[in-house]
Image 1 (cartoon, rainbow, N blue to C red):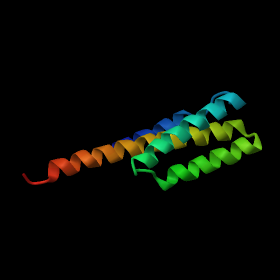
Image 2 (cartoon, rainbow, N blue to C red):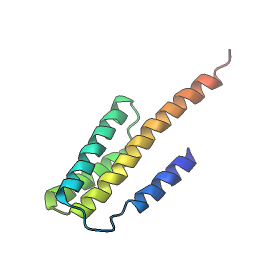
Image 3 (tube, rainbow, N blue to C red):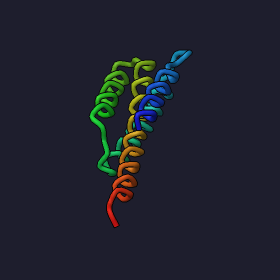
Amino acid sequence: MMRSIVLAAGLAMLSLPALAATQAEAEAALAAAHAAESEAVAAKAAWTTTEAALAKADKAVAAGKWDEAKAAADEALAQAKLSVEQANEQKTLWRNSVFR
């Protein structure tokens, strides 16, 4: 699990845009992040850090800061995916730890 978190942090750093993000890119990234967060909420696995990154992305879109919005949305997307992965991993670990 820790390896996944470190990997996500590394991917988030790599996702920093080399060129300026467009409005369409930022909005698409934000939509994907919101969809992934909805999946995490449905799995009862949402992280508060994901919600904070989404709020930051929403504010950046409203302010027209496309680079900042895309970076925050990419971070939120990675965290939402990891939270679902963590929930699924914990379910498997729980099943395997029950005595039979």
